Length: 102
Image (cartoon, rainbow, N blue to C red; front, top):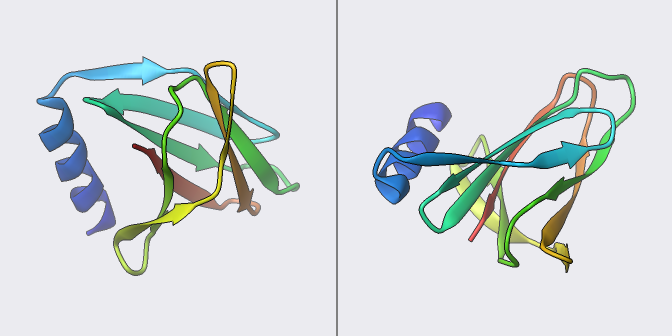
């Protein structure tokens, strides 16, 4: 259900047009897509050390984290610097996280 909900949101916001955005994290893998005015950021951690932040080449905005159990986003703190948004996180080994920059 989580994938379907997020997929539907992304399609509705983008009209089916997605733009890849640069995203990097410490020790994990990060992927970002701009959908309309919003940017979705997925983080996966295949390493033994926790991923503690992800930096996204995006405009300043409000960041929300996706709760896979509640199937909803909730606001979290973030930092902006020189055209990037830095999202603090704690993604453990084989864990994943999804963020939304609005």
